[in-house]
Image (tube, rainbow, N blue to C red; front, side):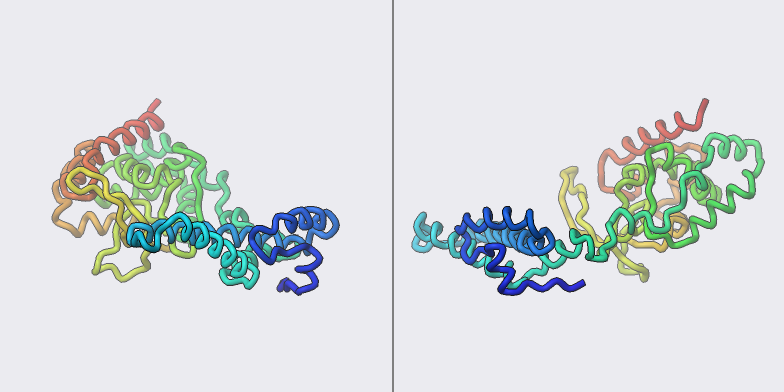
Length: 323
């Protein structure tokens, strides 16, 4: 629903014509008690004005190092700041950024706005449907027995679907939901599923910090595999912490983006099995700690403590599935 701001509304709610018109705020507070809907836009514009002031202030501070003494005195700075604040107010009233429009749409009861919490939970699978006993699955694997078909079919269906998002309530939930896919990948690679889950947990903070695409959707990249020149699929560019000479350096890097969790496991399998640099890692078979240590040596991650952290997570997962 489009909400216009007429000159009559501006007069009614005391829309500030200059930045130091403090009386307009009192008028707005009083008018809002009578007509909240009409006052909403004015409040949103005030917020946009403050945001614009912060942006301009940051730009001025960044440029301060390049200014000469001739144009960088206390007097010029004082009047320049006054001009910036007035310009911020004018831009907000003209809707230069569109931030006020978004706030009105989000906060208005008639704005037909879908909250983020609803969008995130859109087609989320219910926890009861995917809740699995990780220890039971490991025991069955050791005795050569297959898990119940109904459980596997449910997990496979969700893994191959394209949900808007997925969430994990904690480490236990993370292990239970991903164990079926981890077992399948582990069998193909010849390693333990717990080692694969340990790596996924370390890379994503137990599923709480999975990389997001530009539009906010989930990339489903559980192993933080980067998108190099050979990658033809979707990408998600984010700021990441790399280590150079054992020192942390912040960089922007492109990571692979998938349609669902199963695609992430499949690509992880191909990524390791098709690269000779990880041959030593895959030779460790049932030595989970050795597998993770060799991954670090092969350059999977730049963090000098990557293997140490991964083994620590591995021990926690092992404790979950052992009596």
